[in-house]
Length: 50
Image 1 (cartoon, rainbow, N blue to C red):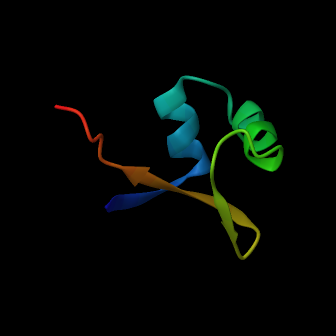
Image 2: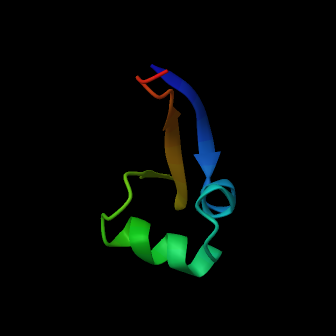
Image 3: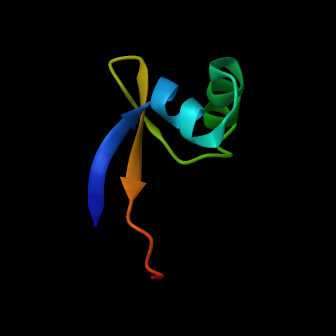
């Protein structure tokens, strides 16, 4: 179940990486995301454990 949609900036903060690195990972398909009007968005999902 989706909790929320995150921006590239929020994903970078969560992963503790630079925004440029997050863009590269998303573009390469290494982190799941989708584009909305040219901007990357990511689904934050609840952990199934705990």
